[in-house]
Image 1 (cartoon, rainbow, N blue to C red):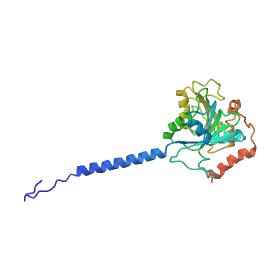
Image 2 (cartoon, helix red, strand yellow):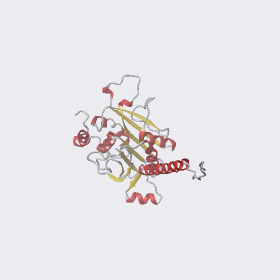
Image 3 (spheres, rainbow, N blue to C red):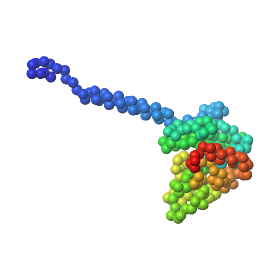
Image 4 (tube, one colour):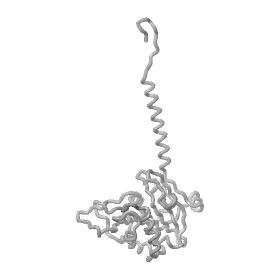
Length: 279
């Protein structure tokens, strides 16, 4: 480009620099996205014995997989089943997300997803999930866990907590009605549920839904028992709502149908100390 006096000036284009800046920003955004995806990845941490077996191509032999999702469901298993000395801790799952915090009085490991195996009947596995699993981590969690299990003749039982406010009904639902139990199962489930089926248009959500969907696709016998409660946190009355499930679970594992008051008080008291709802 030349001026009126014949001076030659170099041409300056802002478009090139803007494109370069945009390219740099896209690369930076992509790097941040990759780092976030890596951070939010679900990791399984097995015991040395289980890890060695899985590395050798041997999946965990499992006839019954019992999954508890939520504080009341997890506490129910702790009081009625895991209180006996017949269980070994064989692993845990960790899933970082925006709500990943250790529960007061517990370490991160204790407040995450913990796997147990029965000593006398090692084909029975239990998993307690008392941490939050984000929506984008549900598929990961389900795929990775079931990829470690022998699926042949597998039976899955899911206990899941939810708020009674999420329950939809045309009739008036009084406060005295909660807590109550509803069930939903896969087409491969041939047993009789211990409670009535979940009515439409109600749905199962979260990890329970992801597991049920996975089992339906892979033709695994599975049932979800969803407890609707009006209480936040572990509550002895809500935990007792799961008791009919003990009839089914008692076929394969030793249970404690009448736990001591101290055992129940241990979990309820922990929640009372954490909650300031009525303070």
